[in-house]
Length: 201
Image (cartoon, rainbow, N blue to C red; front, side, top):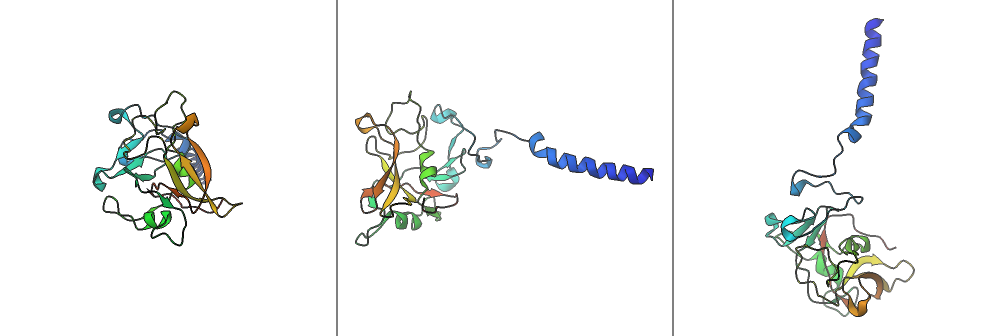
């Protein structure tokens, strides 16, 4: 009987340990840049390019892609500078087609980001008056200073001729913002790798 009780107590102890272990071993920082645990509740500062735990230029992708350790998403280091329509049957290439056919760092698998994913690159800190309004110390290049409006993959659910865009500029002092734009209009395209894709919303 005593042995049986000891055995039961051991099982209960293991169960409690299993339940408690995620908290006991939780960590907010990762030991290596390529093995970050992405989490939408963390914020990683990026003071300068040399002291930036958030963005990692991926040398294994020819330094043409950037890992955002906050979200786990991989971005083009230098997005396209050719504005494209979101959807236009007369256009040779649309925004989504551009990303779907893209090869960066000798890798395919790129797509248009969701509006929420794209908005994670905005820096809303009022102390940051630079243009474009990206986090200080970020490694991105080829992002226009003022009129940096980018398509997302997210269609406006109540108005299907429109899709959401993210504006990183500071034209007219309006600052960065998320706006809807007609799908036949032209905006820039910034492709992403990873994540889950999008449904209309």
